[in-house]
Image (cartoon, rainbow, N blue to C red; front, side):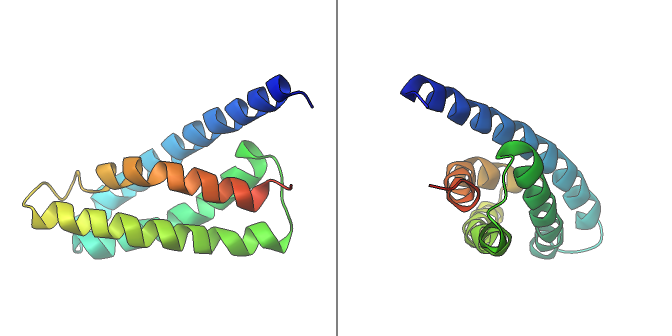
Length: 128
């Protein structure tokens, strides 16, 4: 594949990653707001985060990368999202401790973690 063709493939992946991430984010953010009525921000975030991992795996496999590297990608996803979780939970916690809105806390975490998540997911799903 030419470098131009490879670039187009990568751009397509990035666009699909952003689209699937937006869908996953909107869904899990809505669930976060519901859960926030019943529990603390950390617990609410943890619950919807776990649901988001399962959805992200399905979307990455079928839509974003259109590939599956066997057990490697299946086992890597929880590890990728563990890294993202720790980083994003630290951001959410800091945000709330600074006295900022708990309802907005996941948004900067998402934006700051997105590039790391894409790169780790790409390594997990794309061979070679």
